Image 1 (cartoon, rainbow, N blue to C red):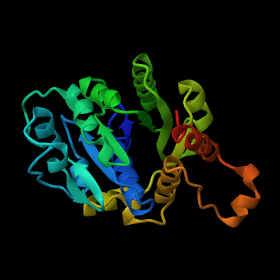
Image 2: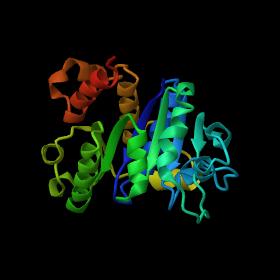
Image 3: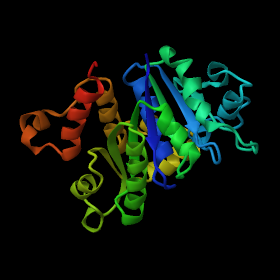
Image 4: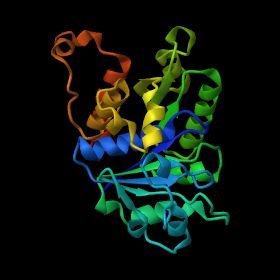
Length: 266
């Protein structure tokens, strides 16, 4: 049975969709997994723009309305099955049907990744409830951290498992909240950290996931390391890192713990 991963944030502009698209592409192309990627940002979907789906004929809106099955609404891009959202859909839909629709096809995939809405509303709740595992995307600033606290609180109130924080858009660590402070505030480990990079805009312009657009970038390497943890595989560390393992970053240690807990059989 495939594992359902929710990539969530309740603040826009943190890079949630970039991470979701890149993680899905890496799991397929570098780890050999079968992936379904779903746009659960029903009000303002843009996952399709990251995955070269401009005008989807069938969307997640059609799936939730019962007019299409998840499989028939999926477009294969870069090896990933992608269910995009409608850019023009105006009717109200029952977003809480998402879990049921996913349960019907979860045996067909290794991982199902949900890109959630960036708002504290029923849309993000539907993504959370449909997920087995949650990752919160945050940036190292106080406004976003306060939103991440709200997302974590909502998940914990529902008894949902939060596997880690993905810390994005690090620019100036001396004048930003540290990883240690974020972990202490949220009581959730940071499992990946990404510096701000111009390649994100270039990748979006070409509608290619960053992890495929520039495989050698620090962003892509960090995405791949996260993929390896989810797939229960060892990171491909340089020799000097293997020798001086006492210099491991917090995120590396946390990914090792994530690998053990995420792949534990209950």
